[in-house]
Length: 164
Image (cartoon, rainbow, N blue to C red):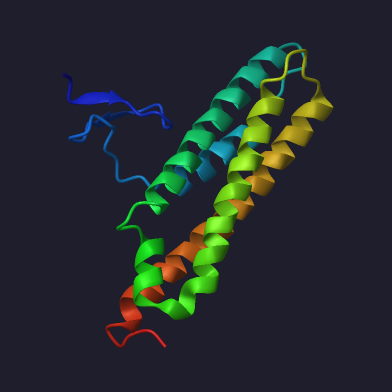
């Protein structure tokens, strides 16, 4: 068994953890946001629409894997969401909002992957539409990530007397 392998959503080599999955300190939401931003900025050449579509599809598939990884980690017993539920019941509405968004993100990224994978030639208008969808999803992920950071801060620092 090799100690390195290709990451499922970043395309880079990373050491393998004890369970055989790639170990990385890269946050899955940051990875998804970066991939969506790069997908939205891909140059479109009218004489090679298939190349754009393939590159876009690869980027959004990577973003989908990263989003699913984030959702999987969020459901683990030691995740920040579970800790917030246990340690700070006042944060339950925010925790619920985070979990509801997981379903929304899954639907949106699956729809984006499906549209990017649709057969047929993509034109400039389809490219603009898909790029806009990628940017809107990236912005929603940024808000989700900021809210999660705030949850972690309030859960850990309030108990220490640092938070409000």
